[in-house]
Image (cartoon, rainbow, N blue to C red; front, side, top):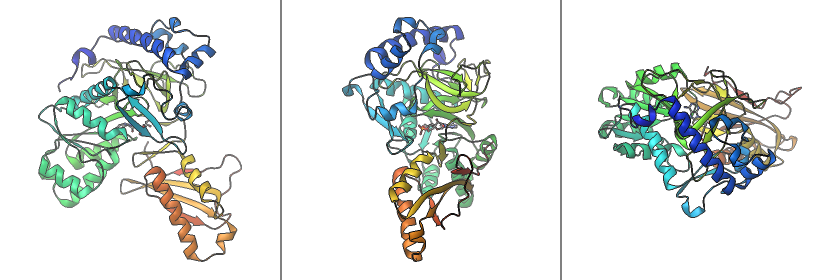
Length: 434
Ligand code: DLL
């Protein structure tokens, strides 16, 4: 397979380190000048930009958190004047407001490079037809993959997500060779393709799937159903979007774009950097991003890093598939969901329901299901079925409007949800991913 930017992707480790050091020093200096929160945190630690001379000083720097994006909503952490921000994207925050990220023109170009590296690693080039079935919009998936496919010179087929029959018809008629979507949607498409009996009409060769955790078993099933090689891609809006790391043909971990992002693995409880190869929380520092740079951002994703040389020739470190999170964020049908967002909806409903609720996440026919059970108040318990259904519908509608997700909402009788002696067990996740 062709390597899109071989001079960077296969750079000797010594040179990567040197490049990272130069870029880190540059980033720390400009952030100290332009981002108030970062300056404050440096001052609290008694650090000046001159104290950071290279990657060896990285662990001295303060962490940053998702909460920071909420506190400085929407644009308070940007490091350039707004006239230089050419696009914004957004993702779920822990409650109410979304988190907002911004990109300069150069940031968008570098992001396109990241995704072009990924597409090239799957065999994509100007002869490819790249069907993008990630959602377009504030979510980074659609436009992120779109710009990468454009960068590589491919023919882009921007279907966005949903409307499965039409997706498949398009795939067949337009001759899509690379499919980009979430792994669960890929499974769903695979099943629908079987039902429609059109597998032999497909020209698909590869798929680029990410935005949620998936297993090797799922990979095997998707590869079989679609007759393709399935590649994992990782990313998060705060750091950039899809393409922070990407899989090569070896399919043994995702290469982190280390010329742009420095990864670290820390103990989520103590914040200490862990020895090479150990599993812990993944932390990123963005060393090229101009618009919305972050230093030592706590992703909350749990994984490990592998510095062994990969057979593909790339020298970038590989991260293993994330195995979980160090916070309570759930990913349901590719959408990031914090239980607190659902709780907020319930609190807003008021007197008809109590704060005793349970969120049950499952999997049926390879699609995630979301069930919300809430105890109703004594007052409504005495009412007729119609008014109970009305409240259920109201909650369902509000969950859809906050999360963009359909949920099954059931009001249950008072005092039927099991009480816990310690921390209430609000979430039951029965999906077996590991
Ligand atoms: O999900 C960006 C993306 C879009 C990545 C398309 C890949 C493909 P967010 O919505 O901000 O961004 O969600 C980021 O999703 O912290 C992980 O917990 C999870 N995640 C993303 N990719 C993977 C993956 C996009 N390949 C959060 N495996 C991250 C496991 C993933 N989890």
